Image (cartoon, rainbow, N blue to C red):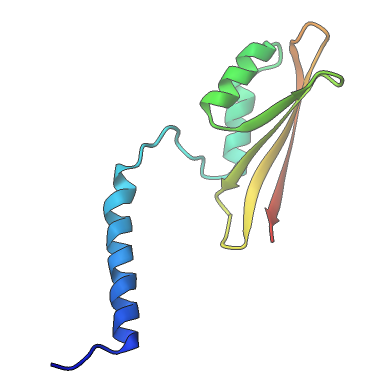
Length: 120
């Protein structure tokens, strides 16, 4: 019996890894639908968080959507980032960066949104 070549071993290992991924990925839980584009996500956020929303409702919404955020008390601004949206590649990812401005009563006054690429 002939000994397998290095190339055959590598391709066999890659095939086995691909098979494992194909079997595991469908079993992973999906907690939220991923938007098609940054524009779609921005429209959803503006619709779901209208001006006049409370800070606590905004924070709960962002947590539920798995959007990273932090609140800056000094400026009364929530900085948020939705990462890896449609348009992302192997080296760069498309992100939607948000600034949600609040008044002294912790009520949403406005939302600024900006798309940008991050990566290497």
